[in-house]
Amino acid sequence: MVERLLRPPERSFFLLGPRGSGKSTWLKAVFPDAHVINLLSEETYQRLMVNPGSFADELRAVAPGKWVIVDEVQRLPGLLNEVHRFIESKHLRFVLCGSSARKLKRAGVNLLAGRALRRAMHPFVPEEIGTAFDLDEALRFGLLPIVWDSTVKDETLAAYAQLYLKEEVQAEALVRNLPGFARFLPLAAVFHGQTINVTSIARDAGVARTTVSDYLDILEETLLCFRLPAYEARLRVRERKTPKWYWCDPGLVRAMKRLSGVVTQEERGHLFEGLVAQLLRAYKDYRGICDEIYYWASSAGTKTEVDFLLLRGEELIAIEAKSGANFAETWCKGLRAMAQLKGLKHRMIVYPKGPALRTKDGIDVLPFLEFADRLAANAFFE
Image (cartoon, helix red, strand yellow):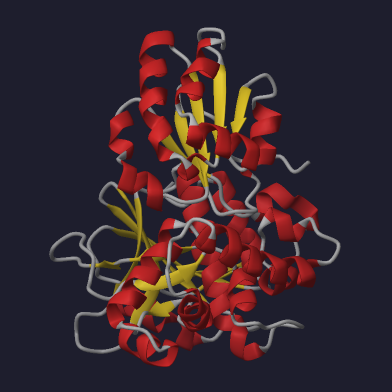
């Protein structure tokens, strides 16, 4: 089994991550003696839905201080009331595992405010896979453990997309218009690494703009996608009206667009940028490499942008992702435009493979694996 970077806290916590990211496997390895209540089991789900009181009966039989895993907790968020009570009365420690924050938010996770931390499980990162990591494979199939570990990655990826529609959306009744949502998914995948055009998607999917906005929220709250806000220097930090949109895994982008085979050059740019985005996001959660992640756009009315801006304290690190084979001076345009940004400590470019370089004005150019090694060492702000 691949050793994951996530380390458990000593107290109760929510463990959230997309389906197939390896949460259940990790829990079995880290908490082998925990009492498990698996709501993905239809028998358990039906029993507790019909008789929620039996959940408390089960917890009363658990020894004080013991770990209890509630898997797929979003299916019955009302159980959190009892979780709260048994944390207080019996000092049980809970892992509340799920693949959707949507129902938890609506049910009021704040009932556990201060009593349960939050942790995230992400797709694999190169450090976890080691020498078996292959960038071309990662861009083609993604790094979700359920796919990466498969001997038939194409089939598993296609099945995952259908599983998501069936189990995460239809079974949880997150949308009423499933055909409209199915038309929406490949359109949302087109905007991977870009700012979302809600009007365009609504027109092409044949649904209302408000429906598209709700669909985007569903993708984010089921942890398949995330928004990257823009950085505003004068106001310190705030979200623009148009954050950039990323899927959590390049394989999912291709699956939703129904693409297979070798990654084309046209696809490669956004897939590579998205992989870097997800890698930064994972290390923010696992190792605390930064406080926040943004993208930077010039306020001068030009379209000059830098893909990622990492903020830690008052310091900033700018990162540009480029999928080309050979370094070109034009890659530095955005990084040079932001050179006077207050607090900027380092500027760097990450590209697939090649030698590590440094420009005359101090921009580091790193091949992807060296970039990943620096993330693993948490060395960017040193």
